Length: 369
Length: 123
Image (cartoon, rainbow over all chains, first blue to last red; front, side, top):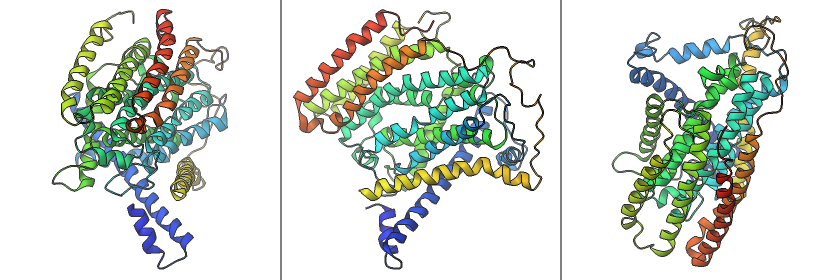
């Protein structure tokens, strides 16, 4: 029984049944939207300050103590800016694109378990739902590029689609590895199955999922669709005002969703000693976000050929090997699974990563990939 | 069970309403005169290089994207079958594992052929 369900059963004492369902649902939705917006604000603030620190500069520090009001100033600016629609563009596609991009980012949180039983709907097909919903936002990005009627935007949009479909495969295959061990698609059951976090059991799957979801949410070094040095800022170039704000918001919304999903699938979700579960969840989400920032400020942007080769020649074969390895272990060595297989899996992950980095020197200078 | 999916449907409606309200917020502010609305031909022209752009934007694009889309569809079908397989592998036993292995090997033939034909390289 989820917390929402208990609340609903309590409400039935005071009002008709259908009203109790609606009220309990609305309370849950408001809580989720508040959580998402607050976390997005925290993420944007942390990103600006920490990237500043990584680049040995201060970052925004003028508005309020340590610059905490910078974001409020920015949002007021975005709200009162003129909304410019390109004359040659397609008005309706241009208008709907930010909405189609943002709504899926919010929808993902319907199934994320924040605490034991604290989840809006504990769907039986949780992972499938997350995978399906989160890939809809690519349609929004493509609409933004198409509706702008700008060559750079269209290049960015095409790159976004190519990138999304390429990285979808390894990400989902890594998630299937989690399902194999947990034996369920429901995110709550997956969290409860993690007596030890799954990134210890299948380090290769964690590695693939982390990199793949970084590419799916278009973070550096995979942010080819907003490569400033090649295509200005890509798909959001012709946007201004609150529509741009919504695109910006959805970028961070997807980052938050990806952090939450990685936390849930691989880092044990809300489980942890001593501290209250919700605090553990927040700590893990912020830790994943810090890793995103760290990678962003360390690795330079990939070329488009390197990006596609990385998905199809590195991550996809590795994900297949990981999948078959975990499947064989679940089937034939279920007794040795918690600890005995950890050594094997770490060894396999190390060997594969070393092998692939020898075979395809993606990081090097002008390498044919 | 049905309540769960009903909640997802309701959440979809609320998410869309929330997203629609964001671009509509400046619209209401513009009624108060807080948001300027002064479009002119220069401002609404395509942001490219300063002069009128040459040719259409909505053109045919690189054929290479199509190869990736084809390969994606093939592997996505594999993944659709993997979800129920992965959920119940312990009960299904070794037969199911061998079946998926055979399925995978058939797909691998095409994948390796594509690799050999240099389809996976971006030129």
